[in-house]
Length: 164
Image (cartoon, rainbow, N blue to C red; front, side, top):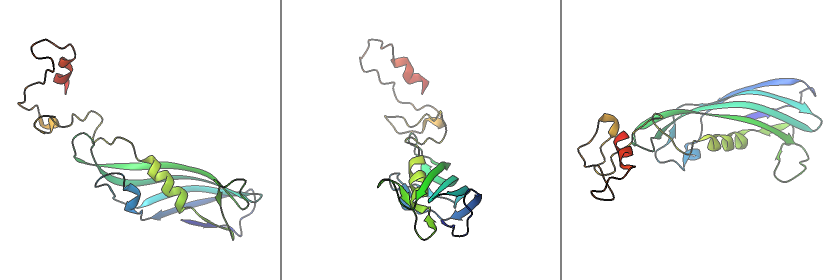
């Protein structure tokens, strides 16, 4: 997404909206993850002095594998973009613009990558897989023996295994 603001009046707010096909390489850190729809962005920008303030809400649907059971699950990634672009940046880590044009793609891509959760679950209380036989525990309990690390002695925490 790009903004061209050569005719913008300083201090006035201008709406921005757009839809682009996201690059699946943004999800390289997640196995078998892929975007399932277009990235949608909506917001505004305002020109002040030699700066342009941009505020966007970004949404994009994606498919992931559940971290507990391996089932495919779809999530909508959402991100907020609130950045100022500078003609003459005060430091090297600021976003810049030139020729009255701003390329929003780098900042949007950065926010989408940061919006991917560290743990993705098909549902909040997913029971996962049996560590012994690999059966999906959402389908019911397996016939494996409950693992008791201390043999015949009753471990007070062993009862927690029965909850999954």
